[in-house]
Length: 314
Image (cartoon, rainbow, N blue to C red; front, side, top):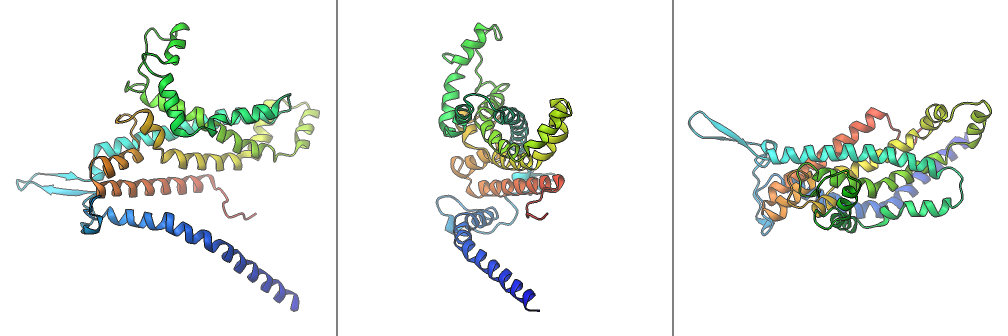
């Protein structure tokens, strides 16, 4: 009877030790993340201004939705949920997230498969691939903005010499190409991140499985579909979740590359403009709150739909 008691005591000590080590991190997280989030949610239900936030008064859901009766039997809805600019920002964010994550996953998979093979100079290539990811986002955005300039940009010069376009294109100013320009820069920068996570999953695949498939004469494409992809799928899903979380809150690359452009303005850009540029602090706080809720709901929905195991149980 003594052995179960000893195991129970040891398990309890491990749990206590884990909480002791986690306590400082949780305290810091509460200060830098939880408290600002709670304050933002609170301001979304007030008429707070950025100059005098302490004078904020509670107004309920008026920042989110309010019906204004004109007194003649007609009226109009106001608020964030009735704002077409907000819903356009939501649509821009979802489009950006879908296409960026899709192409970054595809390109990252291809790069990871190449880097997982043995060839001369592989270590140098692995280091070189990470260069776009290492460059700060602001620097990447400005660098690509110069290359995409309609007057002296090198991108237009190359495409015109190849006869792909007939005249210079204002990539970041044209409503038809602005979002494409943002996607090009983001995919170029973030694909190495996806490749790195997928490569980590590929290196966990037992090599003897490939050797057995090679001895059986199985085509490499079928080996990828039947062996590699199922085994690395958990790593791919984790990479997609991380990348989607980052894409849904994208701000810097859009704000620098296409400033004041409603065709590319994301939810984060919309919230920032109302918080600071338009002096609508409470309205921007409400937008930030909805942004948080949308990201949380989409993440939970994706995890449940893919049945990801985040608890470590077997």
